[in-house]
Image (tube, rainbow, N blue to C red):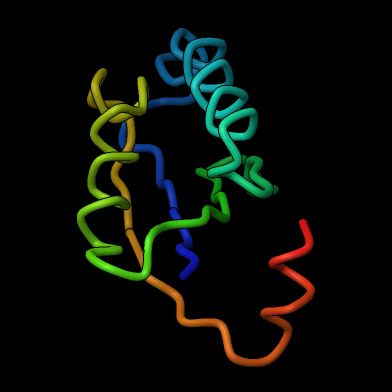
Length: 97
């Protein structure tokens, strides 16, 4: 199972940038652990999103845990939309990443 994590900034960009390095370090760890596939900010810069792998069982619980551990969320500078995604077409391609 996969998930989309959609991030929308709740505070001015100057306040978000204070936490950017911690957020990106968190994402690098998710990538190293094989959880995050890709991520980055929207353009124009009002938030961002990332694609993650989550267990087939309780995917929402895994997405909640990712959100709760993100420094942006912990600092209260962003809100999250968490979407479990049951990929049908292209799943084999994603599984190779």
